[in-house]
Amino acid sequence: MAAVIAFILFGIGILGLVLRRDLVIKLLALGLVNSATILFLVSIGDRPGARAPIQLPGDVAILADPLPHALVLSAIVVNFAILALALVFVMILVERYHTTDSTRIEQEMVRETDEEEKPCS
Amino acid sequence: MQLILLPLLRFVFAILTITFSKARKPLTILSHLLDALLLSQLVLLLLRGTPQAFTVGGAPVGLGIPLIGDQNGLTFAVLAWVLSVAVTSYTWQDGLRPYFFLLLNLLIGASYALSFAKDLFTAFLLLDLSTIVSFLLVGYQRRPRQIWASLHYMILSSLGMSIFLLGIGVVYAHCGTLDLSLLEALVRESAGESWVHLASALLVAGLAVKAGVFIFSLWLPSAHARAMPAVSALLSGLVIKMGVVELFRISVVFPIDLPLIVLGVITGVLGVAYALNSYDIKRLLAFSTLSQIGYILIGFGAHTDVARLGALSYEVAHGLFKALLFLTVGEAAKCAGGSHISVLTANSHQIPWGTRIAMTVAVLGIIGLPPLAGFDAKAILEDGLSSVPLHLIVLLMSVGTVMSFAKLAPVLFARSTCRTCRSHVLSYGWLAGGILLFWPLSLLLVPPNVNLHAMTFAHIAEALIVMAVGSGLYMSIRRRRFALPMEVFRMETSPLIILLGFFLVYALIALGR
Image (cartoon, rainbow over all chains, first blue to last red; front, side):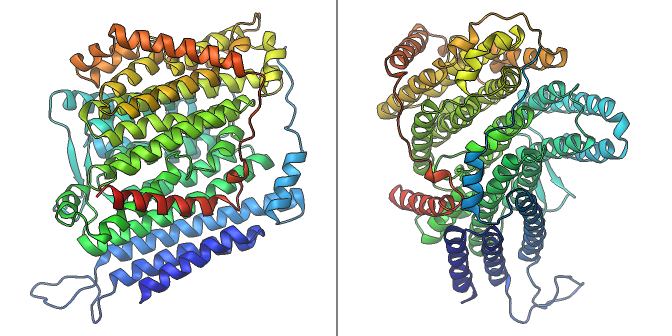
């Protein structure tokens, strides 16, 4: 069930990326896509009644699978880094163009010419 | 041990260059020398037939991080080293901040580690690391257009990596391991099952966003065209190849030959069409990168040993000539005052003659003049293709490449008295030497009988005819402009096209069962 919800959230996230022009909302939609992926990984690592994966001598208890945990932790860290960096980039763009509307920023860029560089002597 | 030392040392040097920033230049030279030593040891081991294998921490099979110094991985690692030397030399006198060298070392370290990694989890982490470093490199000068290109790259790459991670999840849920050597048998046992199709399609779609495949890597033209020349050279020569290397690794395990060939043809043909229609030379090079990835994908998808060797050779050849093209075009655009073909032509006398000679070598390399790099690699690739339609498509792509680069002829043959910066000359000489001496050097990679077959009269005649036909066709259509849809490269449209691309790959995998 969690896997199905994950795929639905993934689709909603992509819709947000396609349909919304606001850069901050686009990044939120990207966050939803990333969270959906994490939910899917959590769902495959789920073992009801499992203990933390520390094997003791003679221990026969069901242990949680550590690999999905490692994947989830890594994905969270990476997604956080990308989201933070993307927000910094959005701030730089907003300072320049005074809008978070991606279409307007693209139009402004088309109007602007590349910064002229002097020919060498 | 060399397999773990190579990436690890680069990460250590990354920290050292930022901590002892005044000593960054000697540290950079030292890192290149150490890499050369370790890589030569690994190459010698491979040539003796005993490629080094290593599991981090000595963990049992299936639990540790397996690394292997096989032919595919080492070829890519050597390319990473060659390009890192070229970029270091090019930027030697540019007064770049220590931060640039930190990013460069991290990127090269990640490339080495990915070359040797044999499990999907490590590959995911390294691809993510390289992606984050690439964002920072693209936006290094903090110009709004670079920031915009970097943001576009970031959103699409993050989406691609999420798709890849979903694929990893599906594989792990069914196999309980991510080690590619163990997965090979497990996936073969489950051939034809729906989860294999889903996992394969997710993995391919996720990697294709990184690998410069046309319908997926829609961030590439703006990122490559707007970054500074040294960064564009690294992105085009190295970063997108990381996705290609991983695509090849999974192609051994998952049934993705047909999608690789179809994506190769699509990216090759569309890349050439857009390159032909581009008059900004940096953008032309970016589209040309997309088209050149087509050759490599077709080679890997053909699934013969000779085609694989051809694809590997082309991976190296493309890394050399595209890096040289981006570096020389960057300098030419700076001297001429713009990168539009008309500006470059009008001010071509201001482009230093050394730069023009290096650009000429790179152009001759990419259009396949015998016996330069592009010719040799394409000839080996064609020898490995058994299908006639594929041969014809490769020929069509070659003609298109000649037509795209024919635009540069007036720039290449102008006169000037300006001198190229000395550090740039070293960089150009290093890469141009690789392009000119590619055929003898490739004997390290390709067996002599295959390599000699590339130099037959038929291949040489074919290359010369392709060049003549391409030049002739360009002359006949040079005043025409074609309207190609540019909407696909917009931030709103590209995620939707990636999603459609995923369904296409899924359908192809199901068809090729």
